[in-house]
Image (cartoon, rainbow, N blue to C red):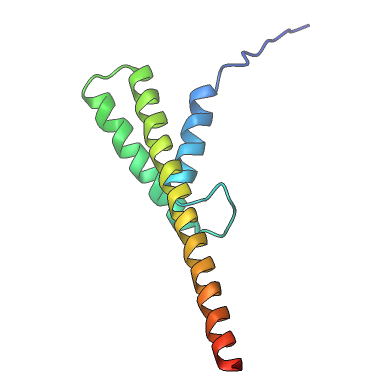
Length: 105
C-alpha cells in the first residue's frame, strides 16, 4: 500500500502569478469582457520581468514582492479608471437631463 501527502503551500507562488497575469492582461475585478490576447500580453509582461529579475540573480521572494507591487499598481489603476468612467457616465446623464428639461420649456 502506498501513501502520499500534499503540501498546502506548494503552489502559492503560482496562484499569485496567475492572478497577476490575468489582471495585468486587462481582466477587471469588477466584471466586463476581455480578449484572450490581452491575457497573453499579461503573461508576456510578467514573464519578461521575472526572467529579467532571475537573470540579475534576485531571490524568489524579491520576484514575488515585485509581482505583488505590480499587482497593487494594476488594481489601483483599474479602480481609478472605473471611478472616472462612472463619473463621466453620471455627468453625461445629468447633462442630457438638463437639455431635455430645457427642451420642454
